[in-house]
Length: 461
Ligand SMILES: Cc1ncc(COP(=O)(O)O)c(C=O)c1O
Picture (cartoon, rainbow, N blue to C red):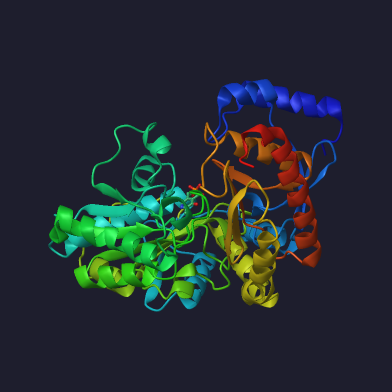
């Protein structure tokens, strides 16, 4: 294992020479160097200099059962000996993919019974986009091509998933953005509400933006609405309670498909297997990735409604789509073991009973801090918005600068929270106990004060 300074320096040097990181400012990475993470154990990761770091982001919204699970390594080892790889093209299948598909159908919302597998969230959303458009062609309505999603949505960074997402900085790097996507406002009350507008009224307004867009482009041209039940990478934006029921009503009224992107919210994050169950949504397609294996191996997929599966099966032509690693046997075996652990340890109901109230209670303690505009959480997703003036909700100049100052303090203090511009977000693994919540609370208090002292001159008294 890498533990001493010399090896760390060498790794950083080689990293700078040969490794292009995702979503990274490559110039600044090469001046500062990357952090070297060498080990994980339960809720902690360890860097090459021996520091123990509490991982408030579950990796990247991923390691729901925590690090260092021997049972997952053993499941992979055993499957590698039995059958390390075989494809699922050309009428072949294998036991782990069948068992996992069966299990996912069991825990998914009603009528979602068939699974198409991939290896990343982006791939699963690309698959969903192709399935949606293929479905409407098979139904004899090929003009239904438009998929409506939301500003600041994140659905991945392949060109199709990036185009469906609503992040301007992602679009800026993938021109031409694919046509056929429209982006409506996101249900972000703290940032978008008008003066005096209640969350309930705002939620209805944001949902009705969907109906306005459907009417603007012509209902006969709309294929689907895509949304993350809670916007994660966009800043843990939690829709007001009125939002999703109204969206569902509009979807039903116009007969379009609902794609629920559960890449972050799947596998217990809100205290239900999927957030669609929490919100009572009736998705036609549900994409998943990340925590299906708790990140121990890459695996993703789309679970589709019987209506879509039946339509595919009513036509005797190929759906020309698939990946070499669709239903990779080792990844499927690890996913099955991961879901088994979640069930044995009751990790999903435990989010409602313990994790969610603990997180909400902890975050509430910071709402009076001079830097904090809003704290919010749902299940084990939380956010702290940093603002220059909490009375007027005025942001800091050069959005994102203060978030990075804060994030770097967190890292130095041995805790990981991610900065989405100036919003600090967290998604702890489902295994946190009171000890971890206490530890997080103490670090957050220290770090908010450290950040405040760095930017004190910019903060309204
Ligand atoms: C909601 C959502 N969808 C899709 C993706 C893309 O997943 P991946 O990075 O595995 O391609 C992400 C990644 O964070 C995500 O948060």
